[in-house]
Image 1: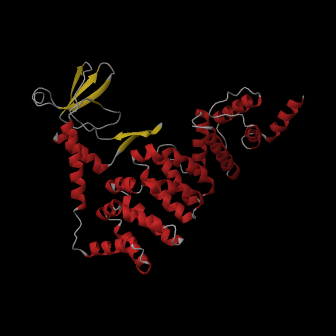
Image 2 (image 1 turned 90 degrees about the vertical axis):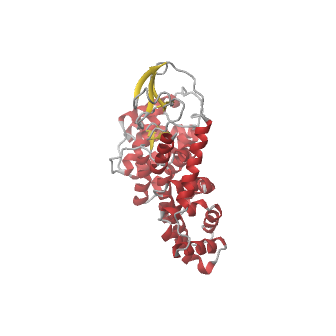
Image 3 (image 1 turned 45 degrees about the horizontal axis):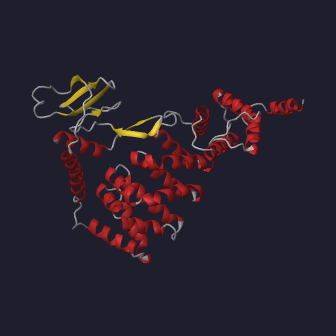
Length: 384
């Protein structure tokens, strides 16, 4: 039990995850967390010493669990044992102990603040001013919280106070752009390199996340930059990716062509962290274009609306930048245009028979992704 708790808390502190590059929402801790039940050891996981490890002959996958007392003297550390697949009973006491350990860790971490310090007094008065919307003290209070938000303990306190977060986000609709930017910068500083604060924010500030995504469309560039900075932290969290990633990626693709160069770099860094683009490349436009083309080659879309959005953004990107399409994408586009023009395209969730969009595919196949003269030849052939 002590081993399981030790490595569980270690993984919480490190907050390091392994994610499948093909499925960014499929994430798991880098450090294997043992219990008294057999669990699969996933690819790339580090295995603590002193565990019972086996090769499951039914699944041909490695599994591990904590050693039972009677096993500890017979099986050496990380011994590999081949056994049949046998049912195991989950140790509820173990689960409760782990949950209790997490709670104790969080409580202990929060208690590090010296409640008699001037910083804490400034923090308390600043929080009170913001909650009461004390206009005269607002700038000073936000500056005070901004300075303290870089501290782990105060980052935790800021994100753990749901009423404070609500007050801050309500302020963003009433204050000027500079003050709004300061609030978003404080949120980003609070959760960066602070796993506990990040968890707090996902629980207490979750209603704001969808608003962040929408604000990427219309807000001033400085606000978009701060929101992208927040998302750059959030995408490391498996829970966030499971809930919001698809919605976020659609919006990031939607706004990319309209962003400044610095904001585009921030956006591409998010894609790099998700391992969706080449981590070594420095050409933002090429990276996003390649990502979009590969989506079409793989037919990786949820519905026709998303399909058309991504094609429109790919067009916009290629019209404003000197980019060359991949041969595989051109081959896909040739086939797609042919099927649609000949009425052979199967109607499904990605195709409802929109003639206007079909014509756009044909026209842009030649004007944007090929030889414009070939478009005239196509219409001559049709007439003949």
